[in-house]
Amino acid sequence: MRIVFMGTPDFAVPCLQRILDDGHEVPAVFTQPDKPVGRHATLTPPPVKRLAQEHKIPVYQPTKMRDGTVAAQLRELAPDCLVVVAYGRILPQAILDVPPKGCINIHGSLLPKYRGAAPIQWSVINGEAVTGVTSMFMDAGMDTGNIIDTITTPIGENETAGELFDRLAPLGAELLSRTLRSVANGTVQSTPQDNDKATMAPMLEKAMGRLDFTLPAGVLHNHIRGMNPWPGCFCTAGGKMLKIHESRVAEGRGKAGELLSSDPVTVACGEGALQLITVQPEGKPRMAAADWLRGARLQKGECLE
Image (cartoon, rainbow, N blue to C red):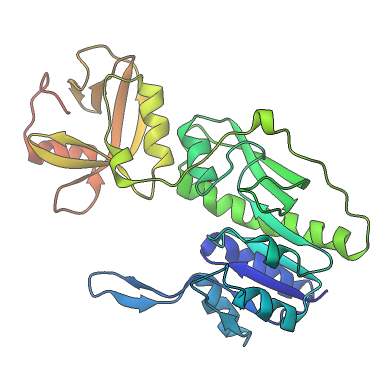
């Protein structure tokens, strides 16, 4: 088929590569504009753009989707199908109406759960045991289109959102390949979503990373996993910010935030305790929690906030 691809981050790259590997024609790729990255704000292309350039595929990076320009460009490109994976924009109906075989989206959750921008992170934050990827026909809503197919996978009890991203991306590519075969041969079927079971997965913000040690240890552990690698979780220790990159649920009781043990580094929570594995003190690189504690000189019984 002739497929126009829309996607931006690393998660979308395996899907574009699989479309190419499967022999589909890709006349163009749409992605977000280049963004400044790092201390020197170096203008950097998105991962999907880099892959498209490697294959000499024309790249479009519009800033507006509703002024009719993109819809006109798509009509000129004349795709059979539009594939959207983590593009980062809601497409208006005028765009969705262009391809005769419809617009296919690969979403990083088992819809209708976790509609929105951060489905993988919220699946981990909420302590889900199972997640997956969903292919669907797009409509003008936020991840509300008819479901075509899914692939499920368990979530490890200590797996981070970043690790889950890396596992779901190739599963998304496999699901897309399977879905496009059914679209191409005319056997595709889809089912409306049950809106009563829908949940949302809004964008994460840095402020969400503040830890509240009055919460149960399991809740905090899931939060740390789900916010890793971005935006990360943090607390205050000895008057300075401490980022928590890795943790485990442990046994122990005490005042919320109380340092119960230095070996291993264990902090009391509202229920149970949290073992800190990898941390990052303010202005320093990440390190083992035991190494941080030796330098911080906090005593057993002192509290993290």
